[in-house]
Length: 311
Figure 1 (cartoon, rainbow, N blue to C red):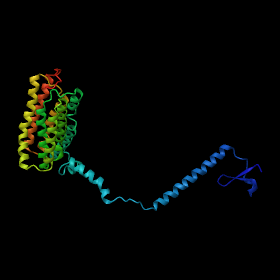
Figure 2: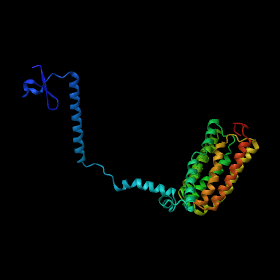
Figure 3: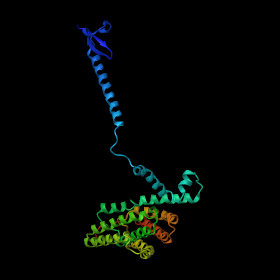
Figure 4: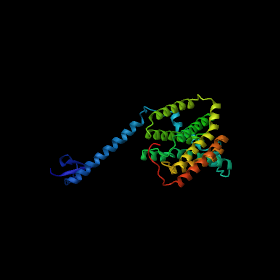
């Protein structure tokens, strides 16, 4: 009675229940019993999994993907292609591999360069902002000059939107206007001119609301855009004169003005290809020269300190 036998799939039964003596074996040790039990459990789990999969295949999903949702990835990539490849340049350069199409090559290079300028413009004045924050002073930064720059950037955005120019042709003006406003805010804040800060913020918000709402007439936008060439010159000249008088550039960031110079230089090429607008091209040509002049001033007056007190 102490002996056990093994039948079929390893099931252990007493000898008294066995019809044949050929299954008689010694009782298995503890390790063999654990292996047998583990195999049985694994087999049951696999069987349950298979049954669950079969049942789930016959169940209708509660949520079905619509045709519109299936088309979303396709539309997304199509919009990117249109954004980067104007006209029929995608077919010419990518599908037909016609890399000798000079018109498409120049247009795509201009578009990619414009996208790079817009991306860089989102951070171009961050070094200037950090300089002011770390020094807790706006010494050396002309508020009047920054206000004129803000006017130019905002006018450029409104004018380009009104003309339906591609975003890569004017996107940096949007980012530069936001960063310029932050610089003005910080300078006035550290100078403790809170009334001026409130007036500037309120007036700029009022102007942005009406400009981007389409409340300004087209001929007014054209006139302002034409004036921005002179306004940008005055803005840069004001900063340059202030630097010359104090023989110091104070908290002006060399990185910011070098990037502004390179960006405006590249923007001349992209403006010719993207818009062909002589007013915008002239504005960037003038801006390039003035940015270069201030970069030279920063190099010339490098290391000269300016008082951090309110002037």
